[in-house]
Amino acid sequence: MILWNAELTKRLACSEREKALLPSLIGGLLGLCDSAKTEGFKSLAQSEDSTRRPFMAYGLRLIAEGLSSETIEEILAIYLATSPLSGYEFLSQCVCAEALLSLAAGDPRDLMLRKLAPYAGAQAATDLLETLGTGSEF
Image 1 (spheres, rainbow, N blue to C red):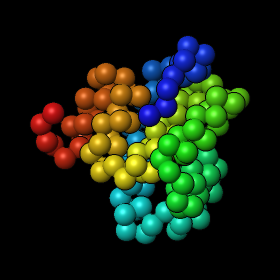
Image 2 (cartoon, one colour):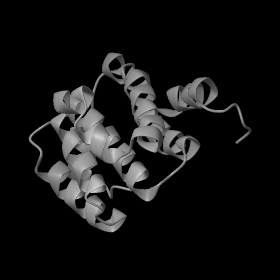
Image 3 (tube, rainbow, N blue to C red):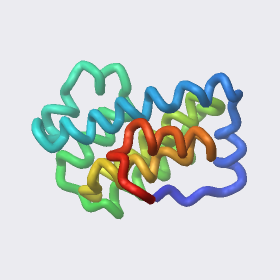
Image 4 (spheres, rainbow, N blue to C red):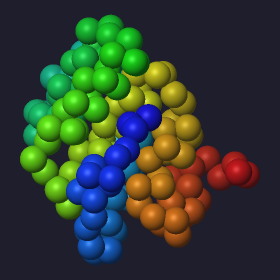
């Protein structure tokens, strides 16, 4: 889990319209979790989707290289702290970082969803858990 400070949190600010894009991003990241189990991380790092998202390709390469979760977290935290992005671009990068950390930890899909959903806001998180989750009680 990325540790936040006031400066990073301020850079997450974006409009509600932009936040409405997060469920789609989270759904795609959950699909990545499913694919990682069947295809492996090396093939995902070289996929067309990850080449469109250099940050994801970088993170997937770190995982494929077998680095520990703690080392990956340190590297991604530095990447985020030095990123020039803000607003929705930064928020989506943070969500991707959280997904990468969940993949590196070997988290099941449901746990990844529970880690990513709060980025969308309280009500959207509840909706995400209902629509993308297994339907289990929480």
